[in-house]
Image (cartoon, rainbow, N blue to C red; front, side, top):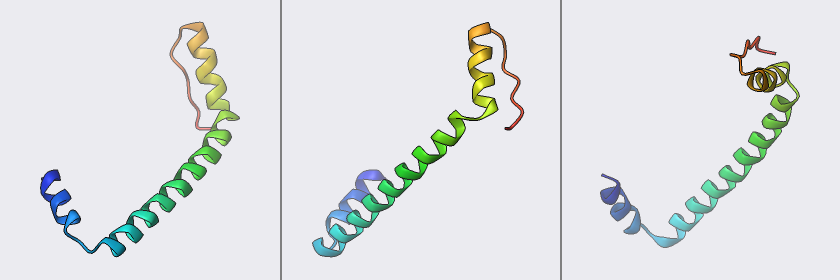
Length: 66
């Protein structure tokens, strides 16, 4: 199925295909930027601290969603 899709994509006009690929790349850049922002917020959360403490104490974590 993937090879069939790749074959169909390959037969498309090159300019629209290039523009579509560029749009997808832009979307990925924005997604990765947002993911970095969210990771920063999560790093400061109480659940993150609990996860680290539980790991070091070799016990199951008790996450509270904050």
